[in-house]
Length: 417
Image (tube, rainbow, N blue to C red; front, side, top):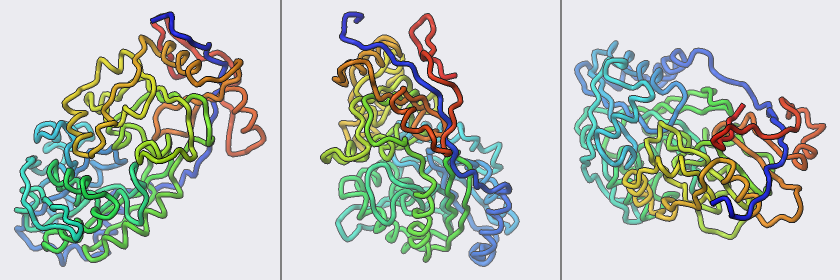
């Protein structure tokens, strides 16, 4: 493959962006305070079986938050247990979903509570648009359910309610069948309505939402009774949007992403960072990146390469880890089969980036190139000379390493250092 047209990788500088560091030091204390604030003791009776949701995203402090809720329920003589709430993730299997949450430290031993994982659901109604609403059978059989999820911008649409407490009901507790139905009828309209249907069952007794800063530290914790879940999602989505990190350029020749994965975003790479129009199949609008290169997939994703189809070039090491069954399940459930496509595959990191540079159709050797670890970690990134010039004089940015060659090893990998 050495004969493909290519352009040499330009010198790059490592830049650090200074985001807000606001965060909560005592997350467990904040959870306890919020639960007390909504009167948890008055919502739970001794002996009741209470389900707690555990999603598949890499939510900061998720194990600590769930363990704190479990401990508070035990003080009330309730019987808490955990249900994986992640739609079709984990290969749409009960075992795969247990494996996913275990990687976040959520195990029966660590949590001191059982984990009941099943893909079986109970149909509890329909949304006004006609989507069938499913609920995890174990959660439906409980005396009550406490929701736990991060509130953030969704990767596929814009609406007053996006990814958060309503979504963990409609998509997470809906399992594969429910998630597929909601995707088919439209996420933006049906997530809030499906959540209303689930709340009307009387099973939802409380919700705990979090917001994270750009460094993925918990900066907000909020508990809500069922009647205030929708309002909480709306209010804290606006808070989350203020903390959402982005690449500070509207146009690039090449964006290099070291890692994608389900632990990073539902679409492997956050479409809010690479261009939401790619997922929505709309005419391009900023950010517009001519070529996207992905070097690898996170081990935590277990070969699920959902969303990889929006990239243009990948490496052989990534393609070798591609698990078709897990990826297809996820993308078919999301009604986004294009996201499962394998892009042009090159032998090494260097090959992929050099071919992408030439493919971006730029004349000469002045390329606008940015390299990021992943779409969730954007406090440090590499930039080529023309972009570095644009950042100079801005106190928000610090040059950690001056312009120089991007380091490579003998195998053609581009180590991040």
